[in-house]
Length: 348
Image 1 (cartoon, rainbow, N blue to C red):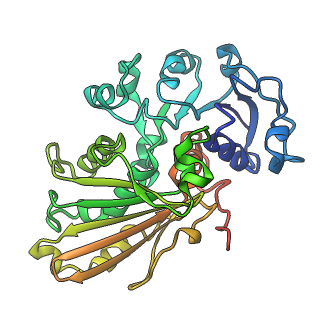
Image 2 (spheres, rainbow, N blue to C red; image 1 turned 30 degrees about the vertical axis):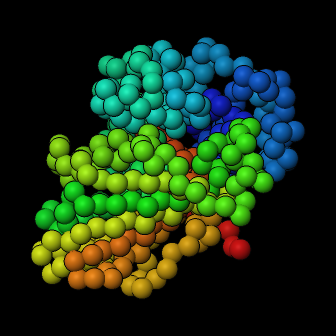
């Protein structure tokens, strides 16, 4: 059995991790930390877990974390890198769901997150945790930076077009992305309250979002380029629903792209990927089709000969966060990637 610790157990991502791991056949959750709830029974805070766990929230102590095989950091940015070097030195594998190990470009990290990186050498050894595109490296990693939710939809939505070079104009991509309110985390914020977010729909961070440099770095990695995607436009929106993410990606095709069977390209590219569903031609993906599951669904539309629209949906808390983190853990520990993650989406 794999012994697991979760740092940051009171947020939506932390409790989603716990929900998944409690039914994982090869995992024992040893500890769940919280700065504010230490000593409180987890099931008292989250009654949905009554009868499934006797865990009690504990303070974060590095010595206790060192007894785990894997530690997940479901914490604000900057926390994981404080403890990562010490834990890795003691043989602990780390999956960070914040941004500490997502960006290899230190200048971008420090600019967008407003802090110095405290373990840049370990960052160089870390692996970006998008399993469908980086599986071999993840399986050998000690530290994995779990991708952001928006970047997951964008990279998987564009990967087949980038691997087959020459199909699209790399500098004409527009990403119109929408997320449920849970993507902002479990916190007291007037803008996220029921009366403020219900019956409303808004764009945010239009001038620049932290996931933009992650998207650009990821797409350059996929396309094996260094200086492209400078004109990429990414605009996120807040949708009045709890879970779900839908990214609509607008792309200009080249002559080669117009002559390619793009539906077949996607189906072939993802034919062996359990968690990526390329939907039939003219399908309309909905967020409720992935709610509570680790599935990501993709649909293609070609409204004009040289225009392609890619629509991607996922549950932002599962494939966009906790579920993908468990995929990474499975790979890091030599387990089947699907283990503990085959639950079917909730309906309605």
